[in-house]
Image (cartoon, rainbow, N blue to C red; front, side, top):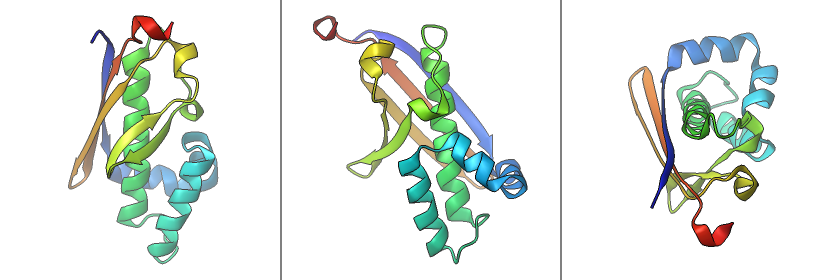
Length: 134
């Protein structure tokens, strides 16, 4: 395995909550892909419709941190946008879906997210594509 890059991001959830309350729709459509937006709305509905409930904020925080960490892992080789990366679940764990990862020269990704109190951290390791995938 050859590592293309590693990225990490830490987020203060109360700060994210303030931004979310100030500009909810603009913020959600900028950060989340359509499938992530649908998942966010379902979590928000379970939270009584509150956008600033802990679960929706943690959901959004995890996506923010993992996408930011992914960006850091591949930069300066590539400049990904928020919409180029979708955070999904595989076997109950977070994973990244990057539809055009071959075009971006990105191999397999490894992700981890953790939160404690007001803080959330996301870490991403990106492998270079294997020689057979070129």
